[in-house]
Image 1: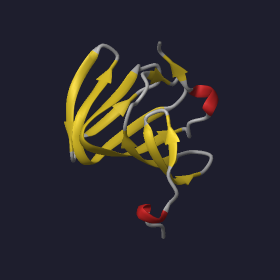
Image 2 (image 1 turned 90 degrees about the horizontal axis):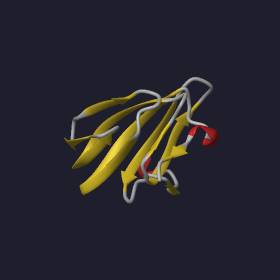
Image 3 (image 1 turned 90 degrees about the vertical axis):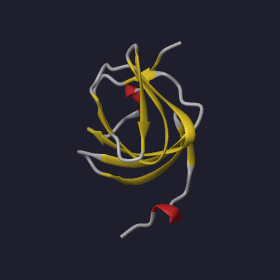
Length: 107
């Protein structure tokens, strides 16, 4: 058993992250969104479950409002970026686990 509040935080390209679990097939990360960078992944599908707050998410060229309880699937090659408006926190599930080489930033 793990408690998210006890896990160390680190800065990622979408905000503060806490690594919950990872094996060869899946990884779970808790994300506190701040100053996210627009990016995409060629191999990884991400699933977002908004656990707290509200904000927006950009998927390719569309922007959607998101809030607690919303679920978002982000397939490979989808440009995305989250925007915090009110303490936006997200449980992120990545299949397969994200590798640093699979981050492609849009400038």
